[in-house]
Length: 100
Image (cartoon, rainbow, N blue to C red; front, side):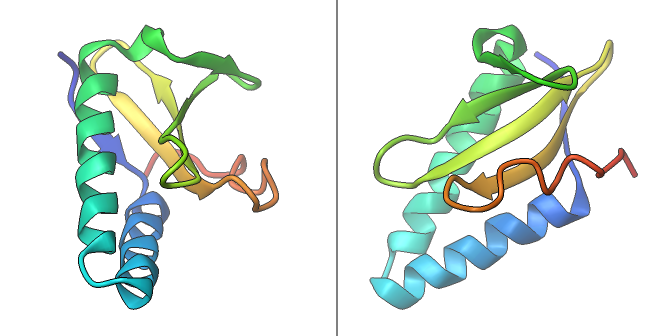
């Protein structure tokens, strides 16, 4: 299992989405955060299990309930998450991010 490191903007994307979801329905943002955490644990255990994405990344879709994807890159000693991105947004706007 590799540690997962979030880009600071990716962490903000999670928080912002959770706030939006909680604004729509009480507790929905908490469910979103739980789903993200569950998915990050799975990525940490099996980083190669998800679809390759251009630029050396991989993409993991959170599912129908939450239209977000996690874009990440595996390194020897960790997994770096570049973005937690809503699927209706410009798909590659995050690609200029680099590990901090």
